[in-house]
Image (cartoon, rainbow, N blue to C red; front, side):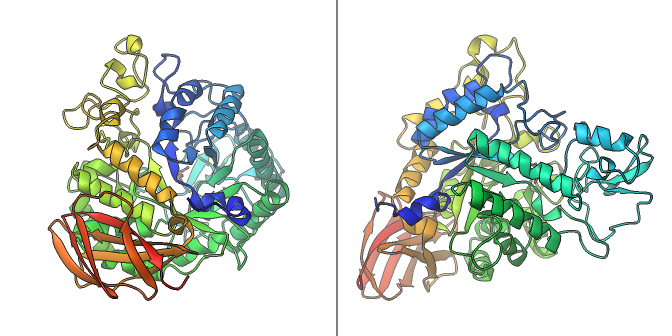
Length: 557
Ligand code: BGC
């Protein structure tokens, strides 16, 4: 492995392989049916062996849990069902001891209506500092340009509060009033929350719903200059006080707007941002069996600052959002991946990776390997490494949030077997014939050379040998078939050729290698890919859905 230079170590997030999980559904250590920090600690060895380098934890704070914890009732405590602050400290020590960094959530656009700030605000006199922690109005006519995000459940961004005798503003559920970022005390309080978790030892913070912080009349209330100004102040705190930590922006916006969250030339806002525009194009490319949607979006993604990094993902805890697509593309994806109404939610699809790809291991591996190959740091959603399914009988997005499937034992290894059948798990374990825990679980895939888990582990391990994947530039290769995507990633002397067959049939193609590519060697014993070099051309044969990586020597240095 190429040793990281000092400069590389400071930007560790560019080499990260991130694993997203919810403490609640990962592992129950005390047998009450709810995942907790001791349970998570007991599974850290698994995560280390998987090869991921960073864990992103979904919200674990006190909350009425009407939005799975994104309705925070206390920013500086732990939900009692998951453990204590001491458990979090212990988890951080244990994670760090294994070389795993930790990204936590900073949900600051809104709080729960149970948060003491809101309870205080609704009782306070209009115009007082306490009242102004939130955004109030006497009418629902203000900020009409802002879209409704949870349009399946909410009909307005305003709700009436009888105690306050006024309407309050909320971009998400009506029980999640938006904080008022025009109020200096709110900005200061939020920075204090940020410091609290950084002092405790987290390595990064995912900034939830960060595009909507500020409201202005006559705008969409998204991506406003004042929102960016607040982010610059948060970044300044990090730069001055916590130089090795990161801010990860959750903004579901078109490429240029998303890119703006990295800040100006040197990158003075967030270090990382999810590449939301890329994600549906990956699914589009797979549905059409052609490279064009990916090539187009990558070409439309402008350069980002040297210290910035995309976070690329296939699935997460939310619906697979299609809100950034043109209506025709959206309809095509809905037809392809969510033919039944119950598979849809808001502007997206509430299914997991394996069911989306028909439980087809080569397709799942192709999609996963693409996220490991494209510019950015990949984010793997827990359970997708073993091909877990979903449960559409559950409400909202719970169907993609069911307990991790560790084994075929009663309770699926999520909870102690002795408690299974006695205590009900926080969400039902999947128990159907295809995706149920008896068939899909870590234990059965662990030692199996042909399992999805083994393949994902191998790919992660190989990716980590190549800094080019996290840091390198990308050059497309001309290919004789629109169904095959080929590109070269290069960083210093590290250079990797990636060739992917997006179609469901076998493909034999000619591709043109960029200048300076020397001898090619497979770093992976891949089934179904063969390459014959002839000068600056290569003939590549790929089985259906196969993807190959070749390490390339460089002729000029
Ligand atoms: C989170 C969702 C949540 C919403 C409101 C999103 O960005 O990912 O799960 O419901 O914010 O907090």
